[in-house]
Length: 482
Length: 96
Image (tube, rainbow over all chains, first blue to last red; front, side, top):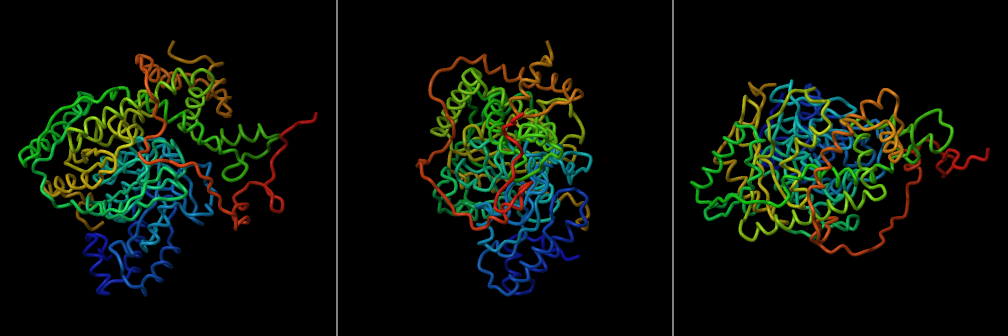
C-alpha cells in the first residue's frame, strides 16, 4: 500500500504539483485504509463519488494546498445526494437536496469528500456510544471510547485514514474527542463559520470546525470554511489568513489559567502534564496568572437548560411527514408524531428532548431558561473581561483520558460531566482549540487554548509553538504499517 | 425522592410527543430525576441583569431570504407518502 497520506500537506501538494502522484492515488489510498479499518469511523463511504471526482481533478491544475486532498465530513453536515443521518435511525433514509455552506466551500478548493463519519445521535453524547450505527473505537486502544460527539472524525484523523475532517461542537464535540484521540480540533468563534446545512442541536451553541493531525493544517482548513453567508445571518465577514502567526515567538505573551481548570475533579496525570506545559511556557517568556471566571462551576446545569431547551425546539421538526423515519400502521396525525418519534429517536435523544420540553413549558421558562440566559451573559462578560488583561486562557480539555466502552452507561449526567471543561467556551461563544500534550497509560492527553472572539490566529500561534516544542509521536499505528 | 412519579414522566413525554412503554417508564423515572437534580443547582444563583440568547458579535439584520424550489421531485423523494406534487398527511381532524 502507498503511504502518501502519511506525508504532511505541503509534501503531498509538492508531489501533486510535480505530477509525481495523482489525486486518484490519494483517494484510492484513503479508501483502502478506510476499508481495512475496524474502528467503525464511517457511516457512509462515498467510494464511487470520490473516485469519479478524483479522476476529474487528475486533469486539473493544482491551485491550492487543499487541492485533491481527501476529507471526511461529520454526518450531521448535509451533503447533496449523499445520505446524511446525524447518527440516527430518524434520518437513515435522508438524502439532502442541497449542500451545507461548508461543503460548497471545500468543493471550491477541490477537496474530495471521502465519506460521512460516525457520531453520537444528533451530536448528543460524548463517547460516540449513542450512535444508531454503533460505537467508534479509539485507535490508541480499541477497548476505549474515542470521545464524542465527533468520535468518527477524531478516530479517522488519528489513525491516518484521512488528513482532514469537519466536525461540529455544541458543548465540546470537536475538542473532547480530539483530546481522547490525540488530534487537533478547533471550535471557532460563534458566527465564524456558517451553520447553514448543519443539522441543528442547540443553535446558539453549535459551531462547525476543523479537525486535523496538526495545528498548521487546522488553520489551513479554517481558512477554507470561513465566509459570510446569506443563509446564516450570524455568520461573520472574514478575510484573514489564520496561519499568519504560526512560527512566531511567544515571549511576552500573557496567559491566564481559570482556577476551575486546575481543580481536583481533573485526573492527576492530566494536571501533572498540564503543569509541565505551564512551566515550559514560563521558561520561554510567557507570563502566567490564575483567574476566576464567574459561574463557571455551574456550567453543566446551565448547558442542560440552554442546550436541551433549544434541542427540544429544533428536534420538533422530526414528525415523520416531510422527510426521515415514519412509523407504520398509524391512525391519525398524533399517532404518527408519537410513534415516529418514539421509534426513530434513541434513548439519549428522547431523554434530552423531554427535559428540554419541560424546561420551556409554562412558568419554567422564567424559573430556568431566562435565569440561565442571565447567568450565561454574566459568564461571557467575565470571560471577555479577562481578555483585557490576558492574550489567551489555557487549561486541560478533559478531566480524564479515554475510558472503557460500555462504562457508566446508566449515569445520564455522565455525558454532560465529560464536557465540564469545554462547555464554558460554547456558552461564551469563544474560539478554543484542543491539542495533544502527552500521554497517560498510552492514552492521549489534550489541552485547550481559549481566545477572545475572532482571535483564532493567536490560538494557532501558541498551539503551534507548544506542538513544536513537544514534537510528540501522535501516530497510534505501532509499526506504522497497518 | 430519587425518582419522578409516573405522572410526571408521562407529562414531559407528552410535551415532547414521545410515547413511553411500561418498561421504559421506570427507567425514565430515575434518569430524568437525576438530570433535573443537576438542573436544580441553577436555583442557588440569584441573578439580575441582561440575558444572552446568542453570543453573536456581528449585527443580525432581519431579512427574508427565499429560494425558489427548482427540485420538487428531489424534495418529495424524502417524504413518506406523496401524491403528485403534494406530501400526504394522515387524518388531522377526526369526524367520528
